[in-house]
Image (cartoon, rainbow, N blue to C red; front, side, top):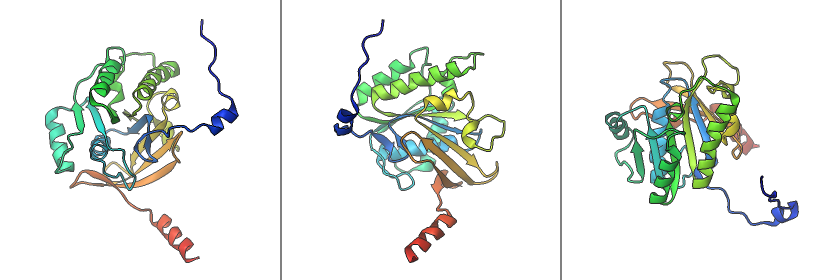
Length: 253
């Protein structure tokens, strides 16, 4: 039988001095569980590796400050040779705060324990990336809302226990939807259990221009216009011309 409910009255809560939630990237990737989804070969892995390097080095992400700290990147679809090539493509100074692994347990076979041990051994961990989510889930034909929600709820609880930001790399459904956020592979239980969802979408398969659709419980919904630099392999943020023009007009007025 469950114990008594732990409650707090509204006045006490309103007057309480609470520690602000942590973040990996301020106003973008806050403490908790997040999903980054995109079609295959969109450039998700390039983006996540660069994010890891920026946070580990305390460098800004598209103008947003980062909370420098240890970063764990579980790159479960690549080997060290490909990771080395990509790392040397995006930076001349790889951070010693960035740790990479190409193998890990599953949700049913020790993943949580592996991550909690890593956090205990390394102190403050700002960001953990799991690339891809499917690699740490059990193979199952039961693709129901309940299963999707339960799997992500376990990862959400892990992020909260470790007081860190966990980013899951995932895929999109093939079916078109006018709202990109509805295209996350799986049921609505995926986005329902996550604190934030990010969709990376190119204008077309051969284009270097794309949009990162961002939504979450603790951030403002936004669309970031990005451009992939094929030389540096970095997704750069480009200012929207209409937004810039509107801002200039407001200043003039």
